[in-house]
Length: 316
Ligand code: ADP
Ligand code: F6P
Image (cartoon, rainbow, N blue to C red):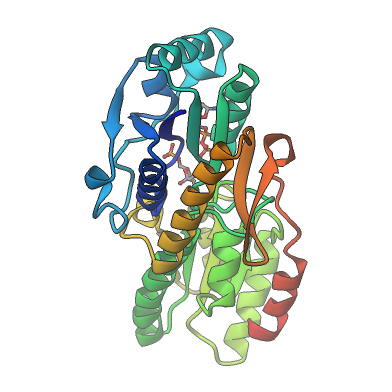
């Protein structure tokens, strides 16, 4: 067996810890590993490099991905995937570990249908893969968001101001939801529980009437134009408020201990599965147990977070 490993889609803190775990456990079992650069693009363009245990020492603490990542349109076409297959044959690689999100997993499933043994590891800050409780990177990003909001709160409380904070998540509200659960905001709106402008405004007015003059309104990206929302609130309530889009700061940084451990457990599991002859599967964590499911069971529909949303009524 020879393993290829790639990171694809948006980078996520902890991807390096997963690479380290795959390389170390494969080498322990005398299996060679090749790193494929730039996700599926590197597979098409033959950009590979040999990885070994010594070479991946010390990378677990680094954010981003040493293999680089990319979005690759060519791989969406059959012709692109055929080229990828040719590269794998040239390097005599029969197994591939794909670290990425929902899109990368769709690519992984297609690659596995071409006869390649593929295992997926969920690496995305969005936490938008429903088969797993946590994706690699989510915890680190959540901590970054909370640190940033904490700083915003310091100045908000000093000036008795309100700030709308836009967080990432693509179409998934987990970063906003968990930030609010952890005390990061007073009002939240997510794709799963979207609030209209007037509802946000009424909640804010209610808070202010109770004497809570500094509020953080957390919103998931891609839902509204943040400046329009700010203007709406300012005009309706005759107050001046602030807005902050946290942006790409959320994707960087040294991974949290949680993400490093999660990535390490998942990386070792990927090699274990391949050695046992399993393929076409995605590794996850459910109820604190490492699990694996068929690619066909992976989707980005959000699991119902009703229990978590219910808690907000006590906390906000
Ligand atoms: P993520 O994996 O973070 O969700 P993307 O959705 O951008 O990120 O997907 C990453 C890459 O995975 C794409 O650029 C493409 O190369 C590949 N990919 C995504 N969707 C498909 C698909 N339906 N078929 C084949 N490859 C896909
Ligand atoms: O999927 C991770 C993510 O950071 C999303 O939260 C965000 O919407 C998207 O990637 C941004 O993508 P890009 O790096 O292509 O701008």
